Structures are given as C-alpha cells and as structure tokens.
Length: 299
Image 1 (spheres, rainbow, N blue to C red):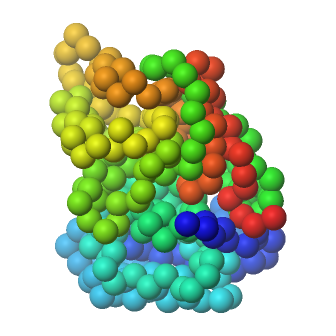
Image 2 (image 1 turned 90 degrees about the horizontal axis):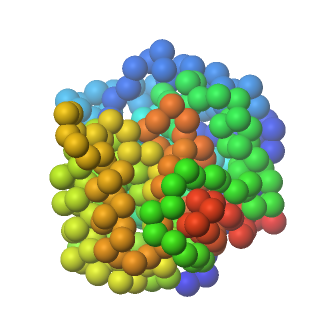
C-alpha cells in the first residue's frame, strides 16, 4: 500500500473543527481555539455544540459535518473538539476524499478515525483535542506546529522505562487501547504487520488493561507487530493494591517478547505530545526512545 500524507500547513491556513464524539464544555473548547487561532484561521459550525445524550448530536449530523470538513478544499487540517465516545459509530458513514485528505488531529476516542485513515493508507496526527489543547504547555504547541508545517521528521520522543529490551522499526499505528481493541474483527482495524503499536489509556483498572491486552494477544496482533510504545496510562492503578498498572503492563509485554518501552508523554496526562501515525519510526526500547524516520506531511 502506498501511504498518502497531507500537505504541509502555513501560518494563516484554514483549520476546520469538528465534534465526532462526545459533547464538551465551551470554556475548554474556546481556550483550545484561542491557541490555534494565534497561528491559523480556525473555522467551525455552531452545529458542533449540539447534544444528543452522551453524543455531540446525532450520528447523521456528526458524520455529515466530519465528511464535509474532510472534503473541504479550503480546510488544510481537521481538529477534533473532544473525544469521549461516538467516533466509532460514524465509521461506516464517513467519506474520505480521493487522494490525500486534510490532516486529521485528535486522540482518545478519535483513535477510531485514525484507524480508518490507517486502513486506507493515510497518515494522521495523534494530538490534543481542542478541550485539552488549552491546558498544554508551549512545548506541546511548538511540537504541534512543527508537525503540521515541517517536511522534516518530528523530533524524537523520550520515554522513561524499558519493559522489554530490543529495537524495532515500522509504521506507528494505534492510539487508545480501549478503542483500538473494539475495532478487532471489523473492517476498520488496521494492518499491524511489522508495525509499532502505540497504546495509551485512562481510568482502566489493571485487570481491564490485562483483558484488553489479552484480547489483542488472542487475535494474533502481537504475532504480527514489531514493537510496542506505551504512552500514559492515567488513573489506572488499583487502590490499596500491592502492584501497579506498570507491573501488569511489564508482565504482559514480556509475554509478547516484542521490544517495548513505556512512559512516553502521550495520552490523557498533563502533557500530551503530538505523535504522527502512519509514518515509519524506530523504537530503541533500551534507551526508551522513539525516533521518527519520516515527516507527517509531504516534503
């Protein structure tokens, strides 16, 4: 498969904002818009403030707005307002344009849309959603701009812990563990052959992490992948337990035998460093370092 990348952005370019998942608070959203508006022209439709129970409007509304944004030739990137839940419901309805679509940015529940892109050989950006972006430091914003605009590979990311020694190269795929596992058995689960798996999560107790990880194992995912990159697992420890979520993840990673490093500042923690998906990268698990071998955007 020939992978397609979005075109690089320039200051003043138009960004579209969509809400493909859950509803969100306006203050956090406005703070994120303000960060992006300091460099780009940010456009959104007031319909994205709709609410339908735990969703940001009906499936038809959310899918229609997302497809419109992806097909809008003026919009150079599509940023998601929030994760939550709901993006998976849109997968059969989302229209990807012919050729390279605009750059898609988001994380958490947006993993479902990243997977859709990956199944079609499109690169995308695992990055803060609008309601998280306003709380991120300047270093996150600087890295975000670099990824959006530069034809050079992103600077390496540093983790904290080697769980399984070794080195591996491959395309980086994945995202939120909970969402990623729910795509198994559907047409929207990407090809993980030779890939580096990026996984993160929030609020999942260790036994649930074990269950989801074992689901991937039983489905043969770790037999096909080349390595594992673990981001933040926020609020995932069991109260009063004599073990941590990292103890559990270490044991699970050792069972795979794949090079694995943890502690990358990616996910639901205080820092969510943007990471390109669908690009080739190198994992040095012993050094807990992830090096990107190509840019997110076209050169």
